[in-house]
Length: 299
Length: 299
Image: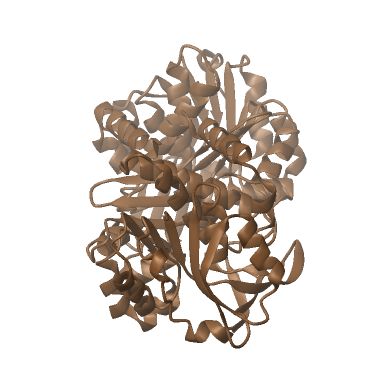
């Protein structure tokens, strides 16, 4: 097995200036896994309720996403209701119904305990840490987090950071965690807690990557149409981890290229609701956009 | 003669979270010319009042900036009083005393009427147009503008656009002029008025360049310390035009590189108040930062 993701599978109801959709497929593990499936075999560990539509299970299977770790629990599937205004960088949460996700305590099936690449999507940092204790140390572990955990479970997050390789945060979260408004300083403060690298996501303004002694700046791919930014961050992670998992060696250049692939994948996701756009594209579309990205950033 | 800039020379009083300075050297033509002087001979056309400090004239001369077009008019020098909060992207104007700049009607001295490169800094578009009628068509003309002219002199601006090669705007101005929130669409709408290219400045998020059938994305150079963003846009233009003026041919790659040089020069300007940082650096510092920029954006 190659890539393992632990996170959420959800039903999203989303409204943007370009449309309104009810109970569409969402969740961090969903976006991550469907994206990573373009690059490699990926397994998910997540929980859904008894009401989770069969068509979505079929969909995941059709993308070769391993669902042995997808538990169907008594109760309802996690639901998120949100809205974006014209400033598509900011999600306004209208309602969060955690449902079965409330008691989610990831149990990694025995045959999935030796992943080479592990992505701990945004869940309680204690649970993220707990996953690490269940698996043989992967080649590379990346994690996500959010403002809620930074303010309520800071110590747990600090403990986790010492055990992972790359942490992904958005700019506001990086500033919140470090107490530093300057992102170079913020990144160095976060790295001091243990991770080898920090990736700071800035939405339409691209991505910053910091390691102890270097950094990399990647602008976002410019789009004419952004329909729904939901899932962009997890798609980014899926593209990044997917690309890394295929690389012969993991060095600075591998990481840089993986960041571009992550950005490219996210640029597809936001062009439609849910994972719809990801279901339309081919590997050729991905490499085509990668080549175009190179062209529009070369000097 | 090589580069000509028509714009303002001013005395700025600026407050940022990092300090407060009174009546320091400012103005679009000042930032532009001192920056461009690293690359080529540059002449300014501007007006100051009788109170303009001699030391600043000496300073311009010491940078080999041609001041034959700097008129000393009866009255006081243009003054701008502004403040920046922690969001250094937004300037808050406290006071604007146009003084002699109010009646500025640029007259190009006879021996400066054949510039190879012309930058029309942000003044009334009618005056910008008037400059064009005084000079032999340069190899390349670029202009800046602002929200005030877009709303009050739109027709004049449209007329000007048909006569220039590159227009520089910030993202808010590009959206205002085009009525399009998406910047790709905004740029194409602006290009429809005549210019060969549009450069959209996004402050700490870098620069976008659009021609009819191509675009280029350049992230900003990351800085640990930003003291005062005043003059960043005109510095950018100075670096860009300076670099272009030294190039053997002007093609897409020339423009791309010039945009990086513009960004690099602006990254120095914002590290101190007024033109102070520009006065400290050498050509070696510039090429060093250019090389570093290449390193942190390569993939």
